[in-house]
Structures are given as structure tokens and as C-alpha cells.
Length: 320
Image (tube, rainbow, N blue to C red; front, side, top):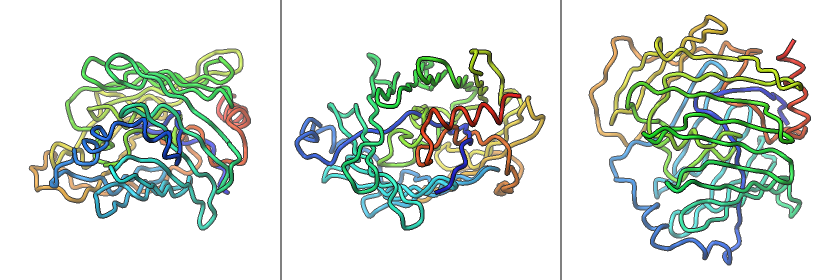
């Protein structure tokens, strides 16, 4: 099992993991809400198939109903999704090669996921359980694992974008993300039918923002609570190439900490042709950031180490 413990995002990670293959619990979900969720995507709606950035890539595959049935995350694993008859995500299985690592069940109240349960392989041994809560607008504002003593808090902009996320372990701050938006370019993670939030990550609301972010500052805290800036993508220098249905084809970020450019490219299927803005051709970034901080993955649940053990290792490596 791979043990890369750091990796970050602008697609950004977070706090996830609930659920259930139990039909009794799934009855809490409104059939009307399920049907709306399954049928809400028009036939000409774009679907994201690939995201590539210097640290790795995501690949998405869709079933005959247009729902994401496979999500392959480099240096993490392959998530295979299962849906009920109404198109509601009820189960995801994480594989490392041919090995089944976790089975994740999702529980709902109405059309909102309120709990995830992660099981070891195909057993009944519970590895993690996460509870989600929402504000009056229906936006996810907290994901908490009482079992493993961590939680994430999110705030939102008036436009419906994640403004900040704070990750705590044992009640103490560990990560903070401060996200900036400058243009109403569509968030590419909205183009993944069936996947409504980033359940593999500790900051899952990144999938729910309406706009594509222009910048993000990631802060880590040492054991005394002192902050250290890991990366800081300058929103004033960010450039996009925009294409189908106002989704980005590429984004170029400048990190004020490393003084380097980082590019991300996006590929889609099922799109109507659209006007492409930007002067440069879209080329995939080279995977040359080995050993650097991966903003796509801060902590990994498919590690042999617990979240707390990973946190200690990350601090040792990053805070000198």
C-alpha cells in the first residue's frame, strides 16, 4: 500500500467518509430528491474525465446512466462507485491494484449525506465514521470523526464558494486553507455526476464551490499551534484557458512560497463545442514535482498509519 502522506490541491481535499448499503437507512432519502439528482444533468452536460497537475492526476469513468462509476486518484487508489435505482451514491470501494482496501457506505437525510462509514476491505470492521452537518443554506460546514478525533470546518462566500477550511486533530489546528475567487469560471468538479463532494479528502467541499478558484493559501500548524505557510497561489497571477460551457481547460498558478508556476489541465466528454479563450495551447503539465508538497492530497485514508500518525510524520518533514 502506498504511503505518500502529503499531497495537496486546489481541488482540495477533505473530511469525508460516511455511509451504508442498508436499504432501511436509504429509505430516509426522498425518492423525489433522488430522481431529481439522477436526472438533473442535461444530456449535453460536460463530464470531467481527466485532471492532471504536476503531482499526479485524476481519471473519471462513467456508467451508462452518466454517473461516475470509477475515480482513479494517482498515489491513492481506485474508487468504484455503486448507486441505487434513483442514481444516489450508496457505496464506494477503494482498491489498491486488485486489493480491496476500504468499503464506504453513505447515509442520507433528505438529499444530504449525513454520515459515512469506512469498513476494512469487505469486512464489518469499522475504520472510520464521519458525521456531516449543514448551514441553513444546505452548505456543508462540518465533517467530524469522533472515532478518530478529527474534524473539518468550512465557511462559504455569498456566491456559494468555499471560502476557508480548517482541519483539527484532537481539537488542535493542523491545516488551514484560504481560498480566493476572481471570476465566475465554472468549478470543473461540478462536472462529475454522482460525486457530490470530495469524500476521499479531509476538505470535501472543494467539489461543491460554484466557481473555479483563483488562489489558495495552505497553512500548517506545529505542535505549539504556530503557523507555517506551505503554499500560497497568488490570485492576481492566475491565468485560465476556458472552453466548453465555461469550464476551464487549463489553469496556471504562481506559488509565492516556492516562486514556481504550477499548471492544471482538464479534459471532458459529452460537451457541446464552446468558444475557447486564451492564447496558448493546452498541454498537460509534466509530473515533475516528486518530493514537493502535493496540494491535492494532504492526508490519505488508505495509509497503514492513522491520521494522527501521519500528522506527526508530516510535521517532521515540513516544519524544520
